[in-house]
Image (cartoon, rainbow, N blue to C red):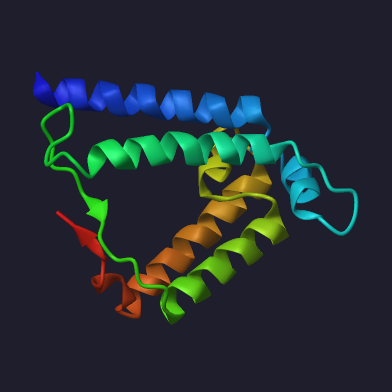
Length: 147
């Protein structure tokens, strides 16, 4: 029964997240690219989306850091590292370059791939290939997550 509750919670959370991405316009590459085009026809509307996401995340992390288990009784794993190193900077650069080139980041790309968008499907395949290469190179061993 507990496993069913966990799965249903994950399903509902994913559906709410996907609906929020659609509602906010994050799944529309044109809106995302207009947001990133600060030197041209800048569209600041996603600033509100990001601000809301940061606010909700800040509250969630505040609560999570004070708990050892989730509300469903599962272990809470909060990132422990606060180091800004070469790996973090390179990863951030690659994430931003991919986002700026395709107009997708991982969450919206998965939503749009599920909706059948060929561009999103190609993005997800490339993203998975990059993750696989990262693991093959042995860089995935340092997780930086505390249990």
